[in-house]
Length: 219
Length: 123
Image (cartoon, rainbow over all chains, first blue to last red; front, top):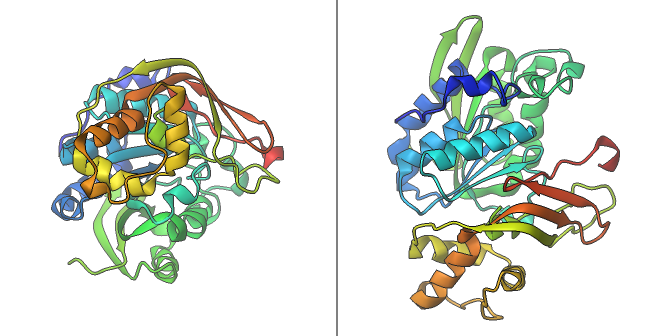
């Protein structure tokens, strides 16, 4: 899968509050690449990335799926991130793309109910004091509060049960401190019985994992 | 912002708002963007849309859609599918406002991006 091109000086100037693609971004792209044939075979219509940041992940998926049969929706609480992800998508030829500034998917309603076929989330997973989360635009991109789970748990409780389609694939980035076994259990309660650790990588002090969740068994 | 997205957005995250849908759309600046037509995509999208909202919003931009959705999207004429395609994907609201139908709270659309964030005291 080709990594979309974004000039790195963008992150120094106008977009200095946007999370610059890092190891966690790349492990996510790599995990999606492994599953590309599966993703293609399920013909996802609505593909959503929450906390899309620079937009590089959704754009990479868009380029790899490369036809006009998918709607890519990226949300972020940071307006600059939404702008940059739109720039990234359009600049790489992904036209059925929309960026919306919102918290998780709170601006979307029953219209998205059971409609999302591919859901990608690289959450703020770093273990921090809870009040670190709201400190600044950039801290919201990585600070995860207690056990790094504050935003992840909100995602599992408010987003996952409502908007996912029967065949939805969910890709979530976590670190060991997030207690992945607990997350897997919580997802099971939401009907996502099957989980698979797609990739695991030790980067600096983080033990990163990408977990795929689905309701049906694929491999 | 495309009308496809407008069709899905709500202001229900505001305190005291029950439905928050549809948001009134005020466009200050629009742009047409050509998007490759794919009939399968449009057919799959039609059942996911609130047709009344789509038809009345499209009308704001000079696109006339029938009052009723095609009963079977896979049998809809190509002519109609192309019109729906245009309405959903090719009209870009670059600057404007989305207005909550219950509270009148305005959400700005800037550089084509709707900002649906609420303040802490609003949720």
